[in-house]
Image 1 (cartoon, helix red, strand yellow):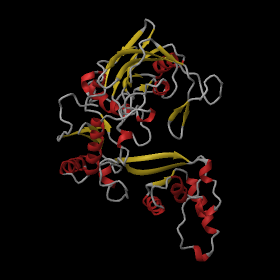
Image 2 (cartoon, rainbow, N blue to C red):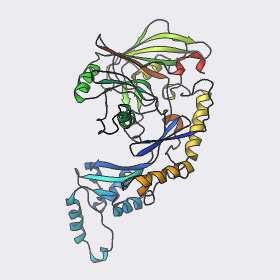
Image 3 (tube, rainbow, N blue to C red):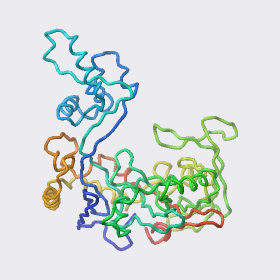
Image 4 (cartoon, helix red, strand yellow):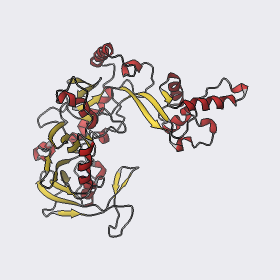
Length: 427
C-alpha cells in the first residue's frame, strides 16, 4: 500500500487543502473530498418516456424510476425548489396543456412537466465521493516531450471523472494543481490534460496525457495501432516460469460484472472474444511467500488483459481478488481501518466546521455546498464521504504497475521507482 516499512498503520493527523473552491482532506493515507454542490446534466432518453401509464411520463416519476435510491417525495420537492429542472420551455407548456384536460376534482393535484426525448434535465445535488489512496503530492508530472505529459498515477485513483468520482480523479486533480505548478496563479487556468490511454483505477504507474487535441490524436493513433511498446510489472502467486511465456487466449468483457471473459476452448473462433496477446518474463521469485515479480508486455489492449492472462496461466496477481488473488492480513487490517475512519469522520468534526465558517465568509456562489446543505435531503450525511460497505473493492490497490511506454527511437517514458510491493521486504 502507501505506508513504508516501519511506519505505523494508523495516522492520527489530518491535513486540509483548498483546491478550486473546494477542500480536500488527507487522513490515514486517504484523500477525501468534502461534499460539494454539483449539477448533473442528462439528456432525456427515449426509453425513459416509454411508460404504460401516461400520467407517469413526467420528470418526477421518470427520475424516481431511473434513480430509485431516493424516494419520489425527494424528487417532487427538488422540482419545487428548482433543483430538478427541464431546460426546455415547451416542457412547461405541455404540462399546462395536459392539466387543462383534467377534471375539476383533479385540479388540486400536483403536475410536473412531461418529458420528451432530446430534452435536457438538470439535477442539483450535493455530492459525496468515495475516498482514494493518495497523498497530497503523489500524482506528479514526470516528464514532458512534444506536448505529451508523463504522469505518475496512484492505484485506486480513476483517470477520468466517472460515476461517483470527480474531484478524486487524475484529470481533476491535475486541473486544480496545474496553475500552481506552473506559477500561473494570476492567469486563466490551462485546459485540462487529455488522457491518451486506459489505466484501470486500481492500477498504478505511468499515465500519458496530452496538452493539445492535435498531440492527443497523434499519440492515440500510435497506441491504438499497437505501435507503442507497453511494459508493466506485476506481483503474482507462485513460482513463474523462468522461460518467456506468451498467452494468446482471446478475451471478452462482461459489462454487467466488469470482469474479463474467455472461451473454454480458445481454438474455436467466437464473435464474443477478440484476439489478445501478452508476453511475460520472470524478474525474481519471493520464496518466503511463494510469489513472483513478473514483467508483462501486452501486445494488444483488451480490458483487464494482463490480469486475465495471468489468471489463465495459473499465476493471478497476488492481491487481485477479482481474478483469484487474496488480500494480505496487513491489507485486510488497513481496509478495516479505512472503513471505520470513513464511518466516523463527519461534517460535525470541529476541524471541518472551522473550515466551513471560513469558506462561507469568502464564497458567495449560491450553488456551493455551504449554501444548500440545509435544504437538501441526503442519505449519506453527516458523513464526509460515502463509502458504503465496499472498502475491499473501492480501495483495492492491486500489484500491477505500468512502468514504460516507448515508440521506437522517438520517445520513452518511464515511471520509477517501483511501488514498495515490488520488494520482498515490504511484507
